[in-house]
Image (cartoon, rainbow, N blue to C red; front, side, top):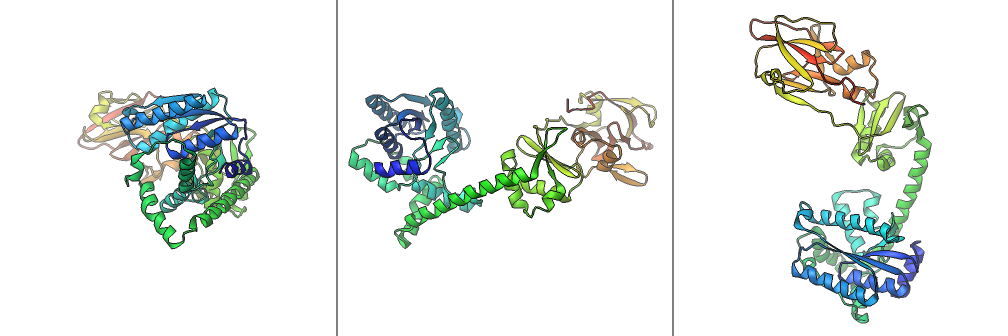
Length: 438
């Protein structure tokens, strides 16, 4: 087994002995076998164990075993204990975030070349099926990567039963996690019921599937290379703003579809759905934007721009007319006046209200907003375009609406103040900033 282990490490370009590695060790058979193989291969192994305390005394016994083995082998060990408050919500997800967050911390502090984990072939097969059921692309069905982003999984070639047999043969101590025998998680259901059925149909299906996963890994690598070339071809840096831009004409003529384009934008924090929306900007309204995680895409013909900037959290107010007059909105002051007027001051607007409980909104404009105009209405987007508002300034333009009807596009357009036999006239004064980009 040691020879196959060493061969797998070399074949996948992982750090070789005597490199320093940070091993995530749980006390289970997989991580204890990996500890043994790494130590026998000549690595400088440093261990990290997270005691989540989820299994009471059993969790403490896991920790004791690891401490004993590391002491015998004179391996550095860092133990981290978690409290219940740190695992609220999705326990598995929170535990993973804690584990890998600590690993990134200690891999730097201890000057290690990589993080080693004990994922094996069965884990990769299970990941394939779980992702396939959810719906995924090539990255989801290629299984677990042997070596990527500083994380190495040198046991991905080995089946779970091989690892256990090796541990018994070598007398390697380990602890059983009784929760693995329960069907509380989908992965366990898959492991206990679905995969054994597949094996009953073809006892050697795992060997063939391992080859399939290797081919899928190769396909994913080729896709990554091709996407990098496409990015170099389509994305150009704007000399004025420093933002990335994509020529609409060049994209339309490139032959790639919405799915491929979404993959191309993935490194910029756009989900696949958001990437498709950015692609749809080819036929979208000038100025429309799609906000991703850390980047915003917007159409400013003839380019789609990708801006590296988190969108500001813009405040909104929704209150009754009476509450507005009581000063509940920090940016708009409302006072009663004798009659309405179309004041030339862009920061003043008169509105007629018939009900003190009517709903007032002070918020950024939205797609679909309209303001009364003549005998009909006009799109707020048209008001902004006609005023020459820059694309980057549009999202921060505010409107004031009464019962859902926009009466004031701040600084640009006011609806006529139509008086009636009942109600009062209010003068609204804008006291907030005009440009929220600063």
